[in-house]
Structures are given as C-alpha cells and as structure tokens.
Image (cartoon, rainbow, N blue to C red; front, top):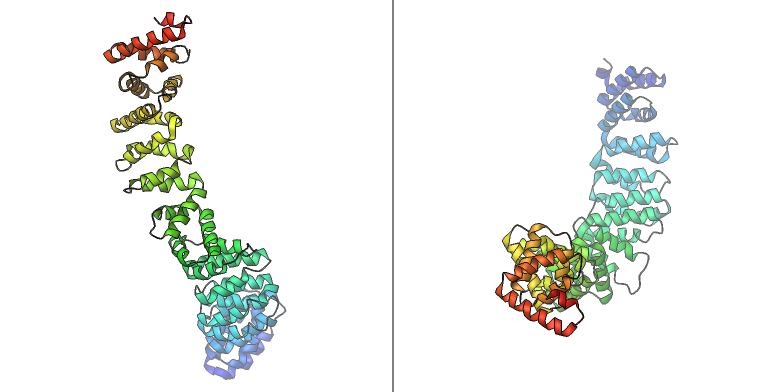
Length: 463
C-alpha cells in the first residue's frame, strides 16, 4: 500500500492533490501523509487550509498536529501573510489546538505587528494560558493601542494571568481615550480582585480627578467580592487623597459597602471610625438602614445606630416596627421608635394589630412613652381613630387611652367629640371611662374646668 511505501509515496500523493481529486480521495491522502510524516509534504498540505470541505479541514488539522513543531512556522506564516482572511483564521485555530509547544514561536511572531493578523496570534496565546507568553503580550500594550481590536485581544489575553506583573500594563490601558479599550481594561482589572487592589489604590493618589480616576474606581467596584475590609485597612497608612477616593468608592458601591462600614462603627482606629461615620452619614437610607438594623442586637450599639436611623424616618420606622417581634432586637427597636415622635404612630398600627401579645404591648408602651414625654401627642393618638383601624388595633388603642393614659387623655377626647370623623370611636372611649373610677373622676374635673374656662355654650352640651 501507499502507506507501506513510506517517503517514496510522497511525490505521487502530492501529484494527486494537484489534480483536485474528490473529497474522499483528499481525506485518504491526508490520512496517509499523516502516517508517513514526510516534512517535504508540508507546503502542499498547507495549501489545503483553503479547502471548502469541513471534513477535509478536520482531517487536515489532525495531519498538521501530527507533525508537531515542524508545522508551526508554516501555520504562523499563513496567519500573518495569507491574503485570504478565512485561511488565516483557520491556521490560527489549528495553532491553538497545539497548546504548549506553540507558545514560544507564536510569542516571537507577535513582533513586528501585522495589521489585522497579529490579533489572531494573540488570541492563540490567550487560549494557551501559558505564562511564557506574558512578556510578549506586555510588550504589545503600547503599540497595540493604534489598533483597537488588537488592544482588546491583548487585554483579554493578559487577563488570563491574574498576577501583579500584569496589573501595571492593564492600568496603562485605562488611559486610552477609546472606550472599547479602557472598558476591557476595567473588566480585566476587576477580575483580578485583591491581586490588583494595592496598585489600583496607589494609582488613586491624585489631588484632582482625572479621566482615569473613575475608571480605577470602577475596577474596584466591579470586583466579584467587594474588598471592603482591605480598603478600610488601608486608611490608617494612605494619603488624604487616597482616603477620599476609598470613601467615595464605598459610597458608590452601596449595600455591600454599608455592611462593611457598619461592622466598623466602633473601630479602634480613630481614622477608620471617623471615616466610617462620615461615609455612612452621606449614604442613602435605603442602603444603610438594613445593616444598621442587623447590628441592633450588639451590646451598647443601639444609641449610635439610633443617631443614623433618626435621619431616615420614612425608611427606618417600618422595619423597626417589624422588629418588635424579634426576640433579640425588639427591646432596642422599642427604645428607638419613640424618638421619631408622633410620625411613628401610623406605622405602629401594624404592631397594634399583631396577634402576638409581646408586639402589641411594645406598640402600646411606645404610645404611652410618647404621650408621657409630650402630652401634646395625645391629639395625634386620638386622630388615629379617623383611619380605618383593624379591630385588634382599635381595641388596643382604646385600652391605652382608657387605662394607661386615663389620667390625662380626657381633654383630647373631648376635642374628638367635636370631629365628625372621630365622634363614634371617641364616644366608645367615653363609655369605657365611666367603667373606670379614675377615668370618671378625671372626666368630671376636666369637664368642669373647661366649662369655667370656655364659657361659650359648647361645654353646656358636654355637661
């Protein structure tokens, strides 16, 4: 057979290829050449890279791979020099399948740059993930920026090597005026995580914002795991400019950053603690309230947390009310809620209607505390009857007014009798008073005093 003839069969086989035989014949010839392994056949084999048959290309790839390093220079030459882009791309794919043995020759072939083609070799190196390619790739950082597609290929290849050696070249790419280049560099640096962090923060040591500064921050913000602890640990030793940039990064990050900041509310380092407090104060309530509430069960933390929560009443009150049923945080929540003043009354309706006795009692106690601290709050409490209250909440509110606050609630209820929206519920409270000896006595005294004071006919109807 031809295969048994060995090298002597090569001229015949190559002559057959020149005659453009059928696909099956081409496949068989390539199979024989693969086994014969005659380097003199390579020029003719390379010409088949343009073959239109996928089956022939598949067999051709196997044949060229069998030649190993002997086929590499020819494939590189096709990538860089063939006028047919399809041939160049196929040759690059064949090189990529050879892995480690192609790293050195392909790296050497990346210089000088061939427009539109060096990019294909860089993509081959990217797939190998072999660190021997790093010097060649780094050397392409500056010259590649005139060709955006090549620059992007270089960045993607470098991103396969998450080492500090690669960070500086990628930072250089951030300075590009072309968005498609610096966006790729941002993504690559983010993928490095804490490996790139020190150099990123070093690059932020600038007195004035530059075009690159927000890109560096974005690289930090894009990290899969926000490096909040590492960033805070840098504050004691970094410059004021870097500290400002770090804290700006915390503000921009949002929820994960807030979680880290709250953990350091009482940090032993004064600079960290002050920075944490300033940054939390500048963040939105929706972001900082959840981690603050999570920390409410920390001994001795509630007063500091309350100072922040009071700045965001609309955001903080509803979840604080929900915490009245939490075994570990209910007492802290109950101590903070009265500090919001009368505006906490409406959110408390949910707690007054809660079937759990503990929650309802907390809500009632908060109302009592509010009124004892400021009796003018009573009128706000009575006006709650103007809302459509759930039955449990209605009864709990009546209980507070006719028992716990019986000694001071009569004036507010008398005013309620003059409001058409409140008269039915106030009348019910009034009836409950007469069942309470303290309430009956208090009612008589207040009514008499108001009669003498007002003397306008309204009191005559009350008496």
